Image 1 (tube, rainbow, N blue to C red):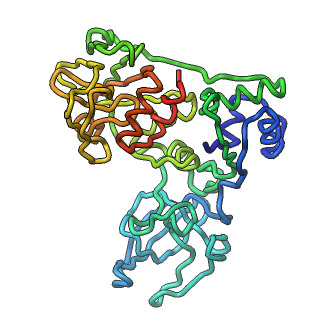
Image 2: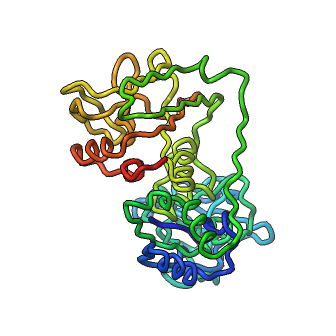
Image 3: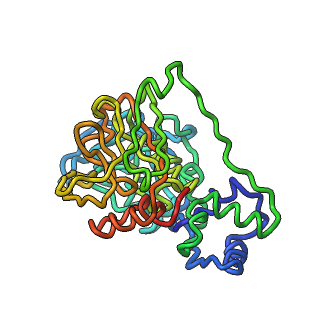
Length: 369
């Protein structure tokens, strides 16, 4: 499990280097397999605002080269760029002359007769990922021009890679590891503050839950969130998820993954409008029942597997993976949020039988509570 050290220190006042913190964990029986820097070899890259896209210089390697005017708030640059998503108003990763990228130092280059003063960079050019064809790394609309990209995305950090034994499910979370370090060092522990804004409608009036297999599901709690607008997550959240090895999907899905990594308890979000009669039924699967999971695979189920269902059909594999029919999409405006406790052996059996290894199953089968 990957733990960003800066994230860890949000919950415990540590006066230790990452290596010293790792040593304390190792002494307590928690293996730290590796420590590595999050940011690649990159310096001088900043937030740039594309103010204008001007002349078309023709095609090069399948991309249209265009002349862009880029501002960093204090300075303005002329940049030749072939990214398809470079457009006026976009805030993007910009490497001015002198900036250092993994491929080397950026210099002024003449491209088709135009002096290009820097680079608008893709994820791959920054050493932050494999994405390149989609174009430049687009940042939030409120990203401050000229801000250092490493600081803005929280890339100046160390990652602790921790091996958790099956009996320490409490440490499958940033808060759990922070609590452990607080106990080991005597440093103050600061659990995250929970702030809940209640609506006028009670959840019980909007959704119903029926548990038909109480031996496999001791508790299932549902919340309904209204007024949802599904869009990309803010940069800080997306890059914090990337730092721990998770792929950002959308603000709704990303929040559930963030909370799972922070607190250790998986959540699942359903599109409320797709849940028949707004009713959740937690039951055993019917022999031969089929479910298309979020990965697009059709799963044939056994009657010893626990499913989340509505009155019409199964809509999720309990504690393992949701179903495609109730997936949160760009059209979703209301979400039904699940938090539950599932019997660990049941989750382990289902995940193993279907060959599905997910972060949620990994936690539930170890007794996430």
